[in-house]
Image (cartoon, rainbow, N blue to C red; front, side, top):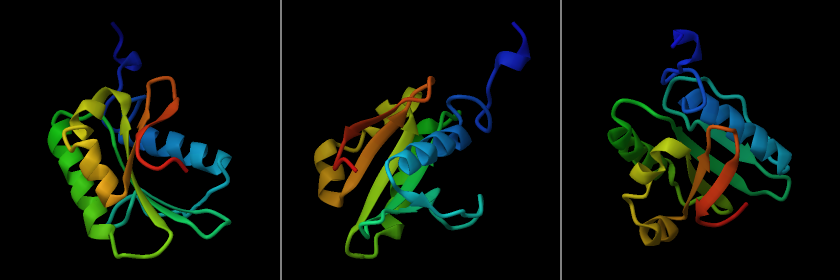
Length: 134
């Protein structure tokens, strides 16, 4: 097997950068405008605004050696970004291969916190697992 067909946490269908790129494209197709953000620093992975005034803060996670801890970090990042702003929603977007780690936080808890859970599968399909649809 050639290493050219392999992917890493920074490259390929399960990588966080791919999850961000696919979800951003999907959001734009839904009428959202996504701000260009620096890749590093204490910022969300995606900060999107809809023409109707809604805002969406997104943390994305891909496949890594410790996906469970990374998903826990993703939830913590979303919680830190919650400022009680009106018309602001939150989403955790994960590679399909790690959704089971995101689901360790029960859907009832995510719903109370206003966090929607989306997946991006290896073929680039975006699916809402639970939460408020956009």
